[in-house]
Length: 157
Image (cartoon, rainbow, N blue to C red; front, side, top):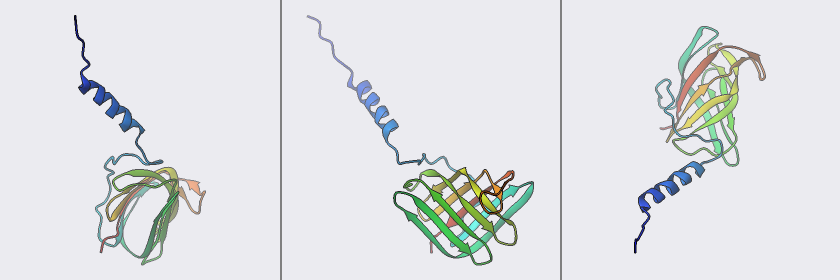
């Protein structure tokens, strides 16, 4: 009589791979190491180019709010003129990225921009990184413009 056996290593691997494809959190994506400026404590550091013009700086804030539930939001104001307001559709865990929309008014008369839905945020421990694309000048919906703004906000004390 011939006895057959199943090598469980391959069955367990198949089950593990199937489960990995099912695990997720709303619009969240895996951490794909967004590039951008280095974070500075209690500041929003910005670097980018809009319509061929450089936009950059490191700006102190005098308040921010990060909230999550069924949806999420991150809003704040710069010590100088300017503010930011971003929203997303579902909870994002630490170390994950998610698609965001919103607007940012850069200090120093660098402009107000509506942020397109392909923009992303990476949620860190006490920091958040942003890649703002699909920009439009002015109050939303604004006038389409070229460029990308990358930013990092460090909320640690």
